Amino acid sequence: MCTTDCSYDGNVVRQPMPRLGDLEREVMDRLWDADGPRTVREVYDDLVAERDLAYTTVMTVLDRLAGKRMVTRTRDGRAYRYSPTHSRAELTAELMHEALSVERLDRTAALIHFAGRVTPEEAAALQEALARLQRENGP
Amino acid sequence: MTPALLAVLGLLLAGPAPALLGRATWPLRAPRAGVVLWQALALAAVLAIVGTGISASLWLIQVEDPSWWRILGHSALMALTLVVLVRLAWSTARVARVTRARRRRHRELVDMLADRSGTEPELRILAAPTPMAYCLPGVRKNRVVVSRGAMRQLDPAEVAAVLAHEHAHVRARHDLVLESFAALHAAFPRGTRSEVPLRQSQLLVELLADDAARARTGALPLARALVALAGQTPPAAALAAGADASTTRLRLERLATPRGGRCAAVCAYVAAAAILVVPTLFAGIPVLTQMWATLR
Image (tube, rainbow over all chains, first blue to last red; front, side):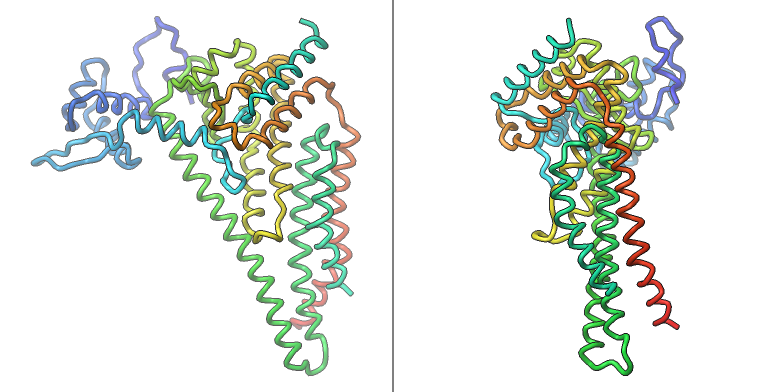
């Protein structure tokens, strides 16, 4: 279901109920940009300046992120402090490695790629075949 | 009689039949029927192998007062059949678990790092210069990921063709087709298995998705997108590209020919039904009656 972003075209109403997934992303961005571990209260104060949000929602989001091992929780007196488990660059590297790794036959098809990998010579042959196809099918 | 018949059938279905079907070119014209025929072939082969084990082990003790070697043979064959079945179940469960774990982790990374696009709810744009596009299948959690590098290479019609292709994968659950063949491949030890069914099913689901995209956006944008995204590969990744290259060329050449293959499709469906039904009737029923007789 599409309740928030889909009708987004610049001048629509303020987004009233952001999705948890979007909030997770936003919280991660704050934690990555922060200079150290943050408490729920600090993250909440940061976010509430820009949008309507409940304190418990931020707590839920941080909990979910901890469940995904995206953030690590450390005890600091009576409160918990949250910090990103990996830097943005580390996660990007992991993603790219997984997305670009050549799938061996016995690896499972978690990702289905649009196009396969080709050598430069094969790429040239593909260009030629495409040119033929375009000539045959008009402009 | 029945065990020998089933054994011959099992050997034919596991060896020459996949080799023959793997070399055939008509499935390229009727990929859906081709996938169904491969599935029927795989299922029939498994049924024939299991049927051989059970019927042969029952045949051994179909005598008055069986000797010790008959009982030993009977037990060994039953155990072997059980091993095959357990390996199949275990392999299916393992492939399903590993695939889902990898996909979930990747989806979480994509959600943290890639941007939503305004129009398509499951489209994610990844800020990476390498041109690439792929989908993460899943019920209601599917994602189509396109890198910025790919977006720069493609015009809107080509992006639409890529999305139509990936949506076809997601909608038709092609991932489940690939998973079942991967599980079958993993269930049998090296030397007894062939990689032809898995390779062929991978090719055929690409052709199916191409057909869906072609129906929506036309052949040319899809062909241009295919060449743009296949040609732009970092040299490090081009190492194991042999099979991929021929797949891409094949897809491109196929886009140049008009669609058709109704005849081939009908023949394939009839063959798929025959492969499953005829052996079941001829060999399966005697086994069942024999089993029933032994149990009583």
